[in-house]
Image 1 (cartoon, rainbow, N blue to C red):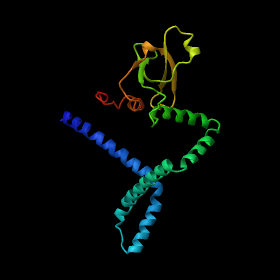
Image 2: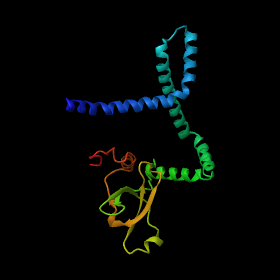
Image 3: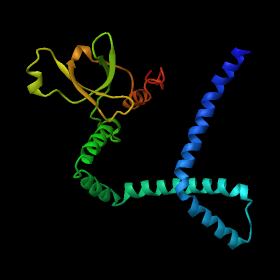
Image 4: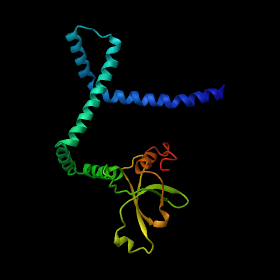
Length: 212
C-alpha cells in the first residue's frame, strides 16, 4: 500500500506543481487587467442584450485578459523590431546607465545576458567548461570568456584561459578566474543548457544526447 501511494504521489506531484505554477502566472499577469476586461464584458452584455452567468464572468475575464496581453506583447515586439522603438530603448538605456548604483546592477545584468544569449551568434562566452573549484577534486561550472590580457599572461609561464563562473541560482553575478588551459575542461552543452542547469541548482538536467 505504501509503495502504491508513493508511486502515485511521484506521478501526481509534477502535474500538480505545473498546474500550480501555470495558475499562479495566469493570476499574476491577468489581475491588473481584470477590471478593464470586466468593464468590456459588461459593455458587450448591454450592447448585445445578453447576460453571462456569474460563475463564468471571472474565468472568461481572465482568459480575455491573457489573450489581450499576449497580443499586446506580440505587437510590442513587432513594433520594437521594425520601427523606431529601438531608439527609445537606447535612450532609456542611456538614462538608466547614469543612475548611481542602479547602473552597476543594470549594466552587469545586461552585459552578462547579452554575452550568454546574443541573437546574432556573437557570444562573448564561447562555451561552457568545468574548472577545479575551490580546489580539485571539486569542480564548478563556468564559461570561457575572452582572451587573457597580455599583462596577466606574461606573469604566468603556462597558457591561461579566462573563465567566468556565475553564481547559482542567479547568474548575473560571479567570479572571473584565470586558470591553466589544461584545467578548463570543455563540456558538450550549449550556453542556454548550462545556464538552465545552473539556475535550477542542478535539478534540470540537459538532454544526454542533445549534442550527439
